[in-house]
Image 1 (cartoon, rainbow, N blue to C red):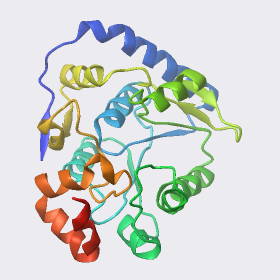
Image 2 (image 1 turned 120 degrees about the vertical axis):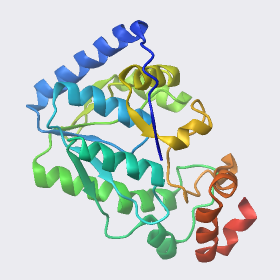
Image 3 (image 1 turned 60 degrees about the horizontal axis):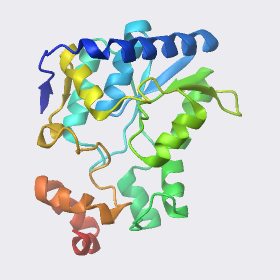
Image 4 (image 1 turned 180 degrees about the vertical axis):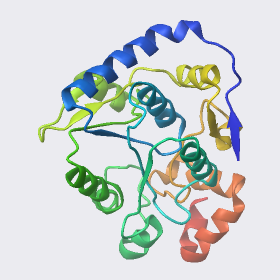
Length: 247
């Protein structure tokens, strides 16, 4: 299901929007528009991509489809809707889905996202396909919806800024890097953007991520899946009965 921004205006956001517009303009300038923006169907990438589309309507918005049980149906519906509205949505399908990578390597049930197993899965699922896309299309930069949600991300953004060049030459743009969660929702409401209805449970705390993501299991992610989406949880347990002990 999808919901729609309320239409309530947010004139106090104008300065942050202007700052984001300036960063995007600089990014497009140094890359000669040879770029893409990552989109997931979540709120942050939705806003970042809407800001970018206002400046560069033809920009490719790249979605890495992680496969069965690894994408929220509401987020998939949003991406399909945006495509119908003329957004240049580019879908990448990794050779192995997240579910199949779990079968290949086992479940990462640690309390952190920095384990060797987690990195191995992310490389096969996300980084590898994106690297291939960048090489194939001569990409010079990408944008994402990274935002100061945690201490680590805040330090990262303060260190790198909203636009920086990686060692490999790629320019990285974070147009909403210093926006708050409330800023994001104010923008969605003001622009009356469609968004994934999963956020209506609690706009301030719900986060987009693979429904069957097990890294950070101690955060209660699987408990939320069982509570709010028992059908998806039951399917996951069929493949991995052990996850029932963590929910």
